[in-house]
Image 1 (cartoon, one colour):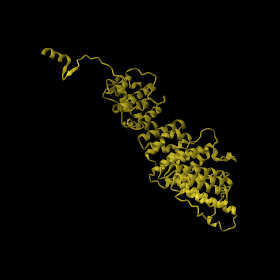
Image 2: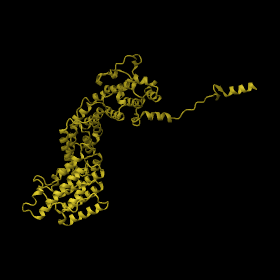
Image 3: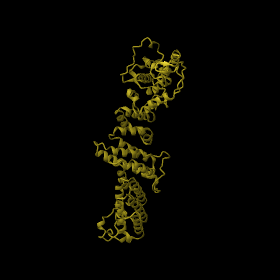
Image 4: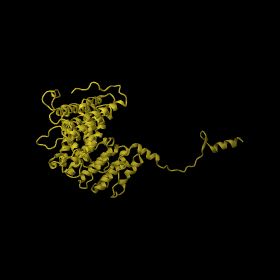
Length: 525
């Protein structure tokens, strides 16, 4: 069948005429097979230069092909070439179904291209239309299922859609957030995870040395929008539910979803990533990724590689390792040694300073830690406090006191009798990387004593705390973690100023008081 020549789309169509034209041709296609050629005109609108025409035509195509699928008017099986329709002894009904299946394929190709359209409204409409086609194909498969499977999901269509979402050139974050609605469907989520894993392997294996930051960011955005439900061992929310032999269907099993989720993330994390991507992943790792994996200990290689990068990334990596140690019995003997190695002056100036102290507080919260280890951290923090800014000191000083409260065996650092007699001989070795060999327990907190004469009154007041017996109740430092220099200044400016009584004469002339001026006048008289 050839496209009609008397009803082609014309650019001069007015605002209302294109809607009337599309609606008329849509009705013709659905009402009578003799008007099958009108489908060419509807599909042609999908390539219009006007966004509104594309959107309206996309909705029309959705209506046409979903109804044809329900009727069984789309050819099922390996699609013959369209050129072969005139040859052979096929029935008219079969030729019609083959013709419409070819038109359906053409429509899908154009909609996939429109995923990259400059207009978001066009992208969104194309996405929703394609997902309606996914649902239609899942309900009425266009391919004969294999003998080994009883359910034929349109994986190819979904794979092509995922490939467009994971663009290498265009940021698709906004469209992916729109796609999240469909990821709530268990069957869609399962096959999307499989498609993403295959796409990552194909693209990143081919471009190992290329940066492709846009692609990696799109992958991260899509991966971080995938969440596995935690309730019950079986899935219940499907785009198209299959009741036949449901117990044998992998998509209906929670453990299979966790396995697919795990394989997808591990595939992404095995490749080299930019530093900003490491930070994004590590921030959500312990809350959004680990709990949804079958075996979180498989992340050990990624976390070890992340630690070697240094800086804030190392700290965030240690947070993941800490979760594996305490919740999954991972044996990692050098954990505290590596944490100790992160303590340097830069921790007071990094973006993740608040998170750093929050995590260190968690890491050192156990009362079963050996005294030498806690003393090493206390002494290291005390030495760093000598060059720390006031905003950091207001966090650091109560933090040190809390560690001593938590571990009473470290009180000797405050109450060492010989400290006053040996002011210049500190046995603590700041350069030692091993906390067990730094001799912290043999030292004292003379640094805190020094800070009692700090120029900032709040810092000096906080340092005076060690002069009195420490209470058992720890001080809450959560409000101090986000403290900035601006907030410290604002707090000082808003503080109530004390009125100091003074007796003086108001000067009325330069260097002369009012009394002196009156005396001059009296003498002149």
